[in-house]
Length: 113
Length: 111
Image (cartoon, rainbow over the protein chains, first blue to last red):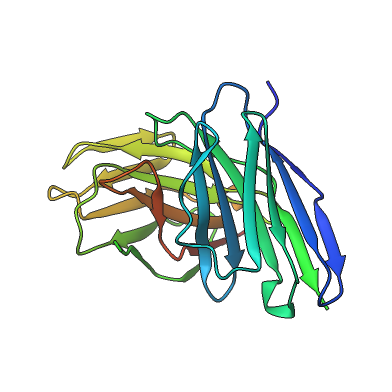
């Protein structure tokens, strides 16, 4: 079975541009998580969904960040406008709602210049 | 917010040596997980411990959950270069199904 799929794997953009990161969770998983990882702050939870509904977005840094999950097999994380401090590796993970074991995708390395 | 602190932050050892990584909190967790992350990849789940005092073994890796479910340790026996990576502990919060991650321990096993 395919694991969590993320695209793109690498993204380089200029400050002020819109960035959209994509995630396809493992089929059958009904919880989806977006994380950001940096050397300084480690792995931070941004937002998570249960059954396509956002449950906790308290980790989203500011209004420039938004996330959607239009169906059970697809989610996006959008940054508009992007800033250099948004540079990080963004991970998507999925799990079953009643099982706390999360499966991570390979991540998207975002560089904002 | 429940916090998890890992120590040490970085560990460099020779192949064949043993090592222990610690994960501590002032909060009680329902369960705790350990992940290993290699460069350019996402974290991969190694084990979940649920019961206070529980010990689980995965080949040369031994995981222990503290009696009070506030701390955990990971012990690697006879480390190999393939054990190199970032080790992350994560605690299950009481409400919801989200995890709190520790800051990680970078382990380097030199041949």
